[in-house]
Length: 192
Image (cartoon, rainbow, N blue to C red; front, side):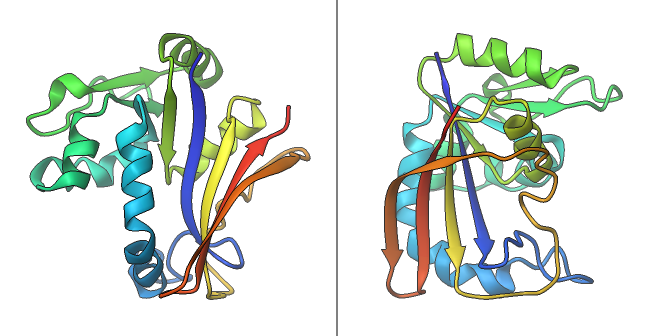
């Protein structure tokens, strides 16, 4: 059975976007830590058997990664990807010249992800996709959280875990300090 690992970069106050009014500008605070942690994040993507993303994340990533080169692009482009959406108007998804590596999971999230976990035997990596992650945690389908916390407090912006509906206990699996940026990666198992 597959294991769903959520991976995100966030500020100390849980924001994963830019500040209010500049939500699309994550680079203003994230780039030092992203650069510092890139080797570990690349390893996560390379080891994943599949990538699960929400529609909004898909719309952004699909416009960039199919047209990039290098190890990270190879991992993103060649790993099977699944796009979860409740939007009934989306009938198909594309990933540049890698269309055989992407599939649409439309409809009931719990049923679709449970089937995906049964189909995939290894790690299923969820990148960004805050609403999807919140739904996965609320449905008891996420297994681990890997979060890189950046040493900045924004005070505004979208918070990654805003809509969690119940207490979720975690067990610390690993920590990694990125000394150049001061960012810290924390890997947790979700206790079920």
